[in-house]
Amino acid sequence: MTNHTPSICYVAYPTSLTLGSANAVQTYSTLRELRAQHAALQIIIPRMTKEVNPFDELGVTYIPRIGIGRLSRLYRSTLWYYLERSVFAWIVLIMLCWQKRQGQHTDIIFVREVICSYWFSKFAPSLIRAKVVYEIHHLEQTNHSRPKESWADSLVVTIDDVTVKQPSRIVSLTQTFKDLLVRQQWRTADCIDVLPDAYNDAIYQPQNQQDVRERLHIPPHITLICYAGLTFAYRRLDLLVSAFAALSEEVRNTSAIYFVGGRPQEIAELKAQCERLDIVEHVVFVGVVNQRTVAEYLAASDILAIPDTVTDETASPLKLFEYMAMQRAVVCPKMPALHEIVGDDGAFTFERGNQSDLTRALHTLISDPHLRQLFGMRASHIVAPHTYAARARALVSICTHAYQEAV
Image: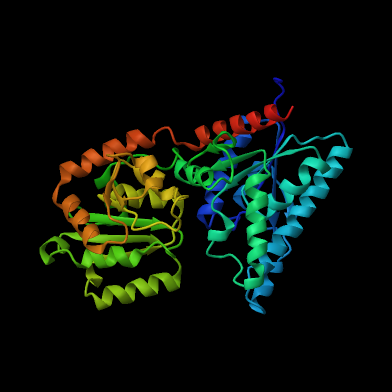
């Protein structure tokens, strides 16, 4: 074992350089803290335009993004995106090989994109003597966006086989997913680390509710339920709307739902649902705003809702951490992956997908301000350790462990 500090190359493929997706926010926030904490860090990401973006301030190395995925307009297939990311991965490998010849060695490649992980896991150890640490967000076989061609099924299986079994270490967002990987004999428990998502404590922190409502022109006396997200897809916001509509008229008349974020088509679909249920006057669509304004809407709220998550065992939504940090009552589905964070009393839970149970949860919280306060206080206490600074420290520790196992 050695005390040498490993050099880390963090390779990411953010879907938006302007922080227009949860993937990009998590990547940027983690990298910002990593840059502050770890001197021996190289960051490599793709770039399609030269427009100024937040990643510029991190001293990243940009590789031109070749938009092969756009060919899916001609033939709709995820395979185009596999090819695009494969080209990117090989450009990275060639660049790191050249750097190694120049005396700049990479000890650890940390990657969170599955196709990049596939190529790095197969070739980085032999080509550049680097170990790979892969932050896995799901098995590709369970990915809703995987290739639908039947002949590609074996390719997807191979991708999982390589990306899960060959990296030096696997990083899971949840203990639930780690347990699944061990139970299905993908890897042994000692090779998998759990590293949950986090929140930006400089933005998401308690604020005076009435002061914020005044700034945002929100009525002071209503009980406000809020959902905030960059996109609404696959989050079952229709369930939240239906559950709210099922509340008694008396309760609805003193309450409101605010939706913050969302794409135009998603908002249009929810507006149409609200019209059918005759609750238009109780629902406000704020649209997309910056993170600090999002935090203000969360602070103005009484109840912060997560109707559902996109994934199951790997569910670790950024909004859960951000909600809890605001010291407001959170309502979310009963799921093992979420229970890891909220515990028994960090959120008010309901049976997943059950509209009547979500209505019950909303009614209980609307009717009991003291209960909301208790849940909010407990949530802020539970989530306090989950800052991006802490996440970056844990990530460096994982990479150091991988390096020390290798030497």
